[in-house]
Figure 1 (tube, rainbow, N blue to C red):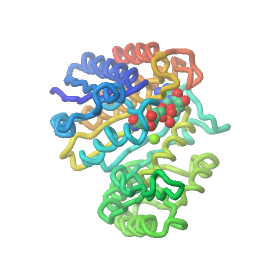
Figure 2: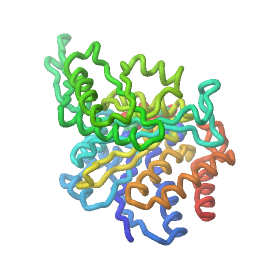
Figure 3: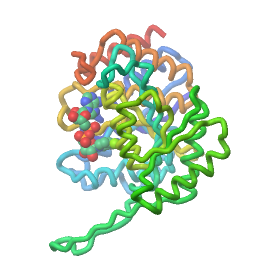
Length: 354
Ligand code: NAI
Ligand code: MG
């Protein structure tokens, strides 16, 4: 079976880690022999934008629809305002391809540790389910009197019953599939009195269909404290586009490094390709040095492979990653001394043992 993958390396370390991930994926298919990858690389990046004035061609989204899945590195570069780069590439893809769920698992890998004192590996095992299509990242609003001292800007969050209900059902299904069957819902419905209140209401409506899942509700500010002080009390977490974006960076840091955290942008209807990417950005501060941690990219690749139905390959890749970190082969952000290539070579070697 051939899986067609659209690859968008993007900017900065996005390029390094996408190259590393395709190497690992090719090694996986060569070793297992039960499937192949057919990669097509798209040079949609800030560098290309600065040269030619566009990120994606006008039919870019239609081109992507022809693939089984999309693998994404990162987008953003200091020479382009970040809201231009994000709104030219990653956000339009998520929205147009109906990728309304963003799944962000967090756990501490073997041979690594949390910066939290006394936090053992088994104490931190979370899945953050992020609403990925609306809310604070709806892109609605505007600015008036922009060039005067009376400038006024609005940033309108849009929350719909349909949008909230579908993310809640996905989150409850996720919670139900895990041993603890526990879902924590995050809002800020004390201060934000419309959209967040609807979010709360739909949560309790949907909860009635999942009596086997235990639930609790947190305000986002208190949630940051709970994640740090009582990590063991959490399992599956559902939050809005903005809140989950922030909480998942915190979660990644608590699990060891932002460099290991994966994400899946899913269209659960499977009518459009889903997209897999590490949660980190283009990291201009370390770009071009060959030292980016590729584990988040590999873990994202494993999630992609699982989505494609290749369970054995996904499990094999996760095992290879764990064996490598357990053996102490780690980049600097995890306290090791290897570079991107060293970790990639080690993961490929582990895959060859499968
Ligand atoms: P960032 O995630 O790129 O970097 C934050 C810090 O973490 C930096 O010190 C960086 O060196 C470190 N880091 C990140 N990934 C790492 C890895 N794999 N290995 C080792 N260290 C790693 O976030 P930042 O600096 O806020 O954003 C940089 C650019 O990336 C901006 O243009 C931003 O808009 C963009 N961005 C893009 C995203 C995407 O494409 N989905 C997501 C987040 C940011
Ligand atoms: Mg983020």
